[in-house]
Every structure is written in structure tokens, then in C-alpha cells.
Image (cartoon, rainbow, N blue to C red; front, side, top):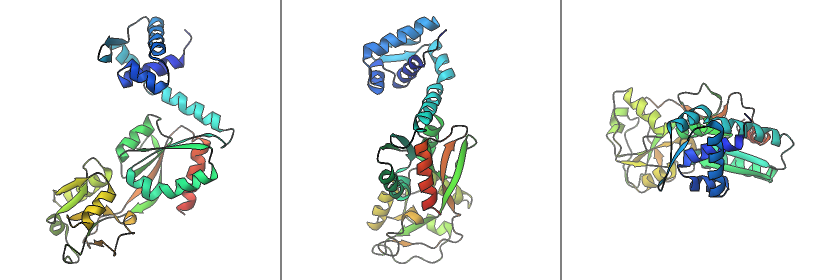
Length: 296
């Protein structure tokens, strides 16, 4: 049997989108072309892969088996093709990065400006996700490099480079709060009106686990989705915000002030991740070189 990888790429996209129409838009084909490709693949495999309905498509048992076997295949092939095409040089190409909003703004933005100035022909795609979601994008071959907050579980499939330490701290506005006792214990801090990131974030999980190690369960009054919102809410006097000191320097001792905590929360770090066994593209290597130079 001659293997047509394009048929399998179309199949995977249809399975992920749950609709031939949406899959056609994603791939850049007509719906008719997508339907014909699936029909051809079903003929080659002598089985029915999708149940069609007015609401979209669902996988048959055969389709589920096929998806479980080849779900990562197309990503592997695309990554290999991308690598060999970019071996010719850095005049054209793509760089796909996964990172959180905070890391994109405070860690990567300056480096991306340098990269774009050096290699204007390379298209840069930044996908903003939580660290856990970035890990999954990298595992599926959807991004070339992932920048995450460490520690994270299940990193055995990745090469990890620690880029810089991070220090979690709590800040407040003196305009709305009197100066706090210094230093403050974890138990005393837990009684303050806390502003924290949402629970699914790696940073929030790290802080929660540290307080739980002191037999304290935090109950923040407000949970937000970004560091900048935490800073804005703290400046507005809505509470004491859990933030990262390295990304808050522009406001510390100006509009916001740090609470001294004893014992302090241990440091953690930002990690740059690549998949083991997948050589980085020329564009990825060039960007990594900028990252390493700027962090030395």
C-alpha cells in the first residue's frame, strides 16, 4: 500500500475539528476536497472512519483506533520537513514559540525584537498558553520552543535549559494599606485580602503548595488571569497581590511595595524547553542564541 501522508493529515484535522467544513478552512482546501480525501482513505483502509451528521462528524471505533495510532505522526513529519527546509539558510522560515502572556511580555519581547531585526524574513508565531498547555503544544509538535515556569512534572521528553531565577512575592499599595509588620509570617499573610493568579497556572500552584507545606490553605478574594491585572488591582487598593519580583521591578518602591515574608518563598525559574530527539530548526537555533546571549 502506498502511504499518502496528506490523507492522514486531512484525517487528523477532521478528527480534531469535528467538522469537514472547519477542517477545510484550517487546511486551506475546499470541503469537497476534504470529503474526497476521507473517502479515499476509507477506501484504502476498507473501513468507515467518520459518522457524518448535520452537526458535524464523530469518529467511528475504527477512526478512534487510527487516531490513537497516528495522532502525533503528522506533527513529527511536519517538524522534520521544517528542519530540512530551513537548513538552506535564514532568509525565510518560521519560528513557533509557546509561552505565557507574562513570559512573552517580560522575557521574550525584547529578544523577539532583536531576532526580527536580524532575520526579517522569518515569520514568528507566538502562542500564549499556560505553562502546562505550552508543554502539550510542544509535545504535539505545534511549537518549536516552549518557555515555561518551572517546576513542572513530566519533563522527561524534553531538554530543559534554566534561563533565570524567579522570586514570588506579595505587593501592596501604601495609598490604601498601612505599612505591614515586617517580616510577616505565612499565617499572617494568609489573613490579608489576597489577589492571585487563577488556579491552573504553574505560578499559582507553586505558591499554593508552599503555603500548604506550612499547613495553610490560601483563599484569595480575587483570582485573575495575568500578572499585569494583579499589579493594576493591587495599585487600586483591592488587596495584596502575589506576583513575580523580576517582572514587577518597574513598579516596586514606586506605586507598589513588597511585604517581607519570613521564611521567604523559595526561588524557582523560567525554563526553555525543546523536544528530545527533534533537532531544532535553524530559526530556533538563531533565537536560542539570542536568548542565551541576553541571559549571560
